[in-house]
Length: 154
Image 1 (cartoon, helix red, strand yellow):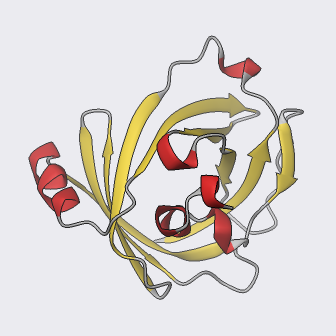
Image 2 (cartoon, helix red, strand yellow):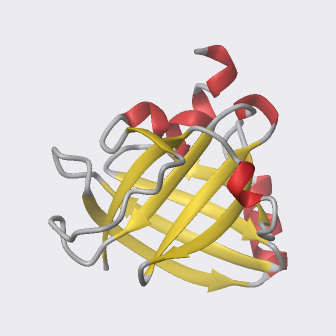
């Protein structure tokens, strides 16, 4: 139940023109860095996720996720803290690994981010040319932070 991921900013979304994305709405029941609790609706599915504190590198942290009904997710979103995240997620496979590209809407509009989940912290992976700088470990790019301090306010 450990999540290992790297995050990058994205230069352009031109490469997504032929890719179908899924809309994601998510809110937080707590944004305490030691135990972030997130409720997410992704398409027609609901999820409850608990994440622990990241390591110093920002690469690794505990993650527990359970699928819940869409009704349960909608009800829990009513309890969420202010600052619901709205984004569209696209998935692109490159060399047997999947990149998740998030195009943010609302108060985070203009933010384009890509993540790749890894099996180990030193796993090798291809860097697509549409990536910009790496932001792994920069707390400003955590969705829980963006829910409190939207990208438009930076």
